[in-house]
Length: 184
Image 1 (cartoon, rainbow, N blue to C red):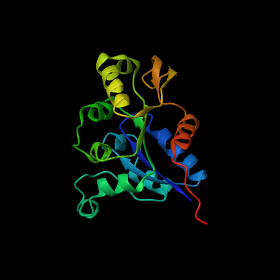
Image 2 (cartoon, rainbow, N blue to C red):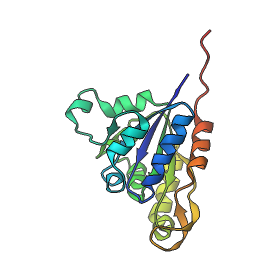
Image 3 (tube, rainbow, N blue to C red):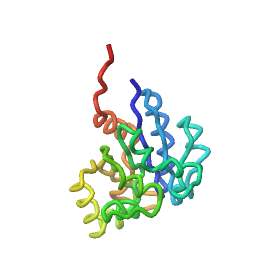
């Protein structure tokens, strides 16, 4: 049986790595559905996400077509696991405080599934007390943190905040998937 992964891609220069993540999940026979935030659209396109996932790319909470079917509820109910990669400081703050003002945050708030969060941001943002507080809150609320790595960042600085490598994210996803029962 195929597993279903809902991938939420938020605004970070690391969003391009989510395209590789989609490919790697599909290689493991996962059905990948994606939500691309407005910030994420500044780095990659809905067309590239849809092409690689083989499914429509969602982004608008108030889409007449998708929301007449309560798309944010349907997307979370159909998923075995939800992954936020990359997770921006903004989306993490929304998660920590229960905001639901866009499709990504509304879907996360409406979910009863495991949520894996792979942050990506500048070192100063990652180490800021507000981000540290928000990370503690989402973990307390049940999210599984995929720690960012350290190294050279897009801004030219060196430090923590790099999105974990796609292989490491895939391993965390596979390990978090529910075991499907075989039907005799």
